[in-house]
Image: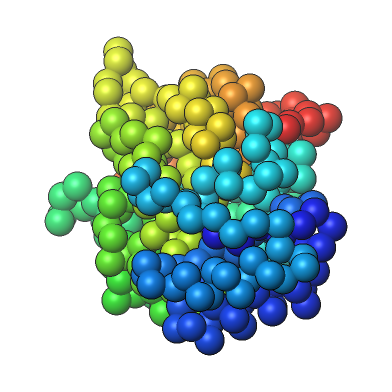
Length: 353
Ligand code: PEP
Ligand code: MN
């Protein structure tokens, strides 16, 4: 890992380091804050002493340090970038016109699944009017039963494209199969990796490579079980290792059922993730609580635990429990639009870290 001197992290200096690394047959990943930058070396560094010797002679290099790989991740580790050490700041980046990590909570809202054009476009217009920053909606759904509604697939993606054209909202949508990454990526601004796929390493690899090549965002959910901080960050490292730069994590609750609640929200885990990584972290109060009655209070607890944003499932006020013969996906946990609008109003003056 090469740490640049503060104030000297210019494009030109970074390029000189990257070129040198590439000349020796290795790849690199750049992490940039506001003040500092590091270049992580990707690949087998074992016999590259010559390379590190050359790099340490550059006047703008502060130091060249081998990073321990025993924790399994290094690119996404907070402690490696001096500027992020000992605080809770995150990197900033843009998804379309939306800046993530700038101290305002980012809200991604929309239906659980794209189930018809009319439903998706109407919800998109309403969440936009309420102040949402991005539109969510699954065109490919990971379903427990093969008989469950699997999503409208490409037709669903086209509906999302239509909703984006009308509202201008960037699209967040899930990809469940490495073979679909190209197709989903054509329509998505942010590719979502679902909880069930947090450790689907071939999928993480494909999505990471695609996002790197096409400058896409990724929203990776935490797994259903009891993932450790290390497991979540190793999965994020797969994305970064393959070149992705705009990575967002998302706490979506653990599959422990208390009373009637579908899962158990874990805002403290979100908070702890923030301590270990500078990647922005979102909370998902819809899947973690599983009940519309608890969505806004759960959302608040995520914001108090330092979430950079929220992903919330919403439905129209008068939505029927079925659309075209299919049950509305996650109806019971979707926030009716009026309540969503009220919640968005309550966030207007809210500042976050
Ligand atoms: C979703 O966001 O639609 C979803 C399926 O979530 P999760 O992967 O967290 O279950
Ligand atoms: Mn859902």
